Amino acid sequence: MKLQQVLSYVRRAIDDYHMIADGDKIAVGISGGKDSLTLLYALHGLMRFYPMHFTIHAITVDLGFENLNLNGIQNLCDSLNVEYTVVKTDIAQVVFEVRKEDNPCALCAKMRKGALNTAIKAAGCNKVAYAHHKDDVVETMLLSLIYEGRFHTFSPVTYLDRMDLTVIRPLMYMNEADVIGFVHKYNVPVVKSPCPADGYTKREYVKKLLRQLNQENPGVKERMFTAIQTGNLKGWEGNGK
View 1 (tube, rainbow, N blue to C red):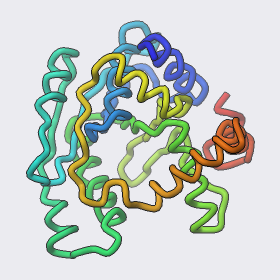
View 2 (cartoon, rainbow, N blue to C red; view 1 turned 120 degrees about the vertical axis):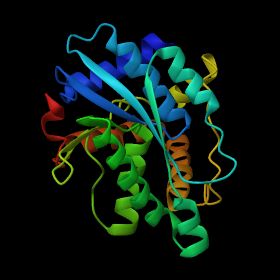
View 3 (cartoon, rainbow, N blue to C red; view 1 turned 135 degrees about the vertical axis):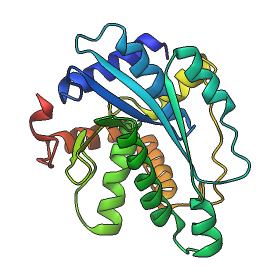
């Protein structure tokens, strides 16, 4: 997928759900994975011609795994002239060695989000962009349906009143396959997650389930996404228009 196509998806999401206002300083949460780096490229590209003036600041929370190499991301940010902050933490040690969590993802996510939000405020940003794409939206709905018994997923825009911070999700119209295509075409410097729990989670199970459902029932993912848009979920009202 070409950058121009990515920009088209991202601009449509931003316009439909009014994600960006003039003067916004937007933190981009960079995990090092394909999704967050695609988002970085997209927002950087959009800055050049979007009618609302905004700036971006890339931030990575380093969980403390020894084999994490962020040099490629630093070089990318330098080439794009985007400020890049790496937040050093000992989250990995706390989760896997001190607490020895049976469900490490929940505690890790909570601690990582806290460290990220603190860094975002320190950088003077009023918004943070997360790299959730269409597959993430539908997978989260299925997770909620299967494990919690409710029809729910995250919304395109979320205001965190305790932090006075707005979360936006500009990749929400992109399929994961589109992201993979973009990353391969532009040789994006993706960093493999060093987490030992990577690939062994409930989300990974649901990801495979959704893939199977879509293979057996072509178009089911799109129909699920439409159901989310029209299902009167908080934050999705009126398709953002």
